Structures are given as structure tokens and as C-alpha cells.
Image 1 (cartoon, one colour):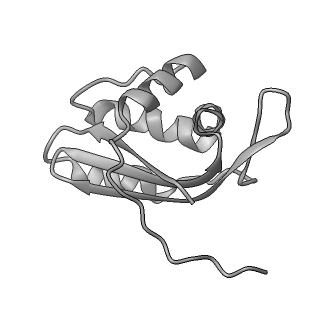
Image 2 (cartoon, one colour):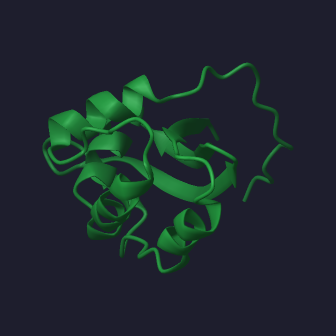
Length: 124
């Protein structure tokens, strides 16, 4: 399964406050990512968030279309709440108030993937 990592530039010294923002994160009710016509376009399998000093990185394991994943995340109440709560701690503002702004920010903040290695998944 592919992964994507997106970065947030955080003001140093606020790591604990930022960690609290993610402490009550609300996952979407469904992992299924809808496409433009409502058909399944992918799934979000897992997420993880890491922080050190002024850098926060969100890792997302997904299946399917990455742009559909970003669009799906843009309208999730939990994601919107996190983006709103992070604003005071950002050293570089993120335009995430609209779907288009969120998707553009998502793409701009993606880390370049150098390699992804996984154990083979069991058939069944």
C-alpha cells in the first residue's frame, strides 16, 4: 500500500500544544474515499503524526487515487477541526479553508517519497 507524508511548519516551542490538537482527533466514519461520482476511489488505511521542534509530519497509508484522498480529507470534520486548531501554531500559514486550497496545500506540503518497503500481504 502506498504512503504519503505531508508536512506542517510549526512555531518551535509549541510541540505539546500541537500534540494536544491531535489528541482528540475524530476519524471519519468510513475509510472509503468517494470519487467524483460517488463511486469508491480509494481507502484511507492508517494515519500517524510525528513532531519534532518546528516540523510536524502526517503519514497516510492509502489505496487508490491520492487526489481523491486529499479531497475526501478536505471535507472531514475532524480534519477541518485540526487545521483550524493548528493555525495559531503555524510558522507558515496553510490555505485549507476550501477544498481547492486544502488540496493545493496538501500537494505543496508532500514530502518526496524516496522508497516504500512492506512485507507481502497474505492472500486470502
